[in-house]
Image (cartoon, rainbow, N blue to C red; front, side):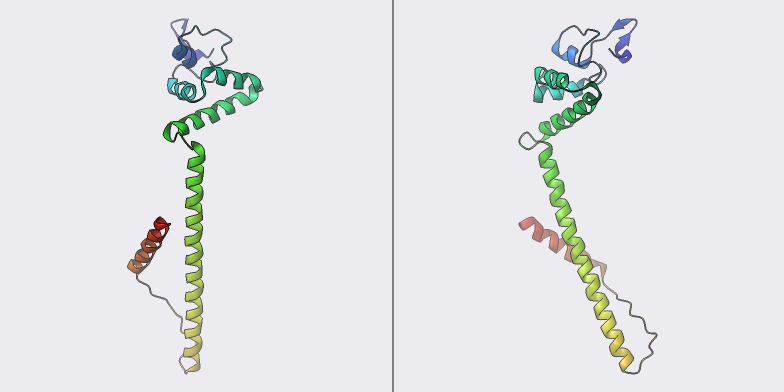
Length: 161
């Protein structure tokens, strides 16, 4: 058992044993992973997976992998508490949709830059042909409000689909 749970020489039960209202022994499977000062971790894991299933999963794993398994179970249990149907898969799906939307926005912005550069080179070529100085540089000016309106228009298109 961890020393965190000690108080005046008396061992406090780990969070799992406290929730399950049983005596915490020295060889308690849960004590290293669910300390007494973090009861919420085991409570959420117990609610989603059940103590018996968690115990079985931990016993099947080598000891060096149990910490990672407990971290994964805590993460999945918390995700299931927020979204009982999809769990962390729902979060992953949402983030993937955001990545796709941002990639589309990036592609549109890159296409716009290419278009502006092409328009600038066309204007520079036509001005140099008309006798104006060749050192003329094109500085595109655009209204930031128009960019914001255009991006909010694109967002409204995405929300409709």
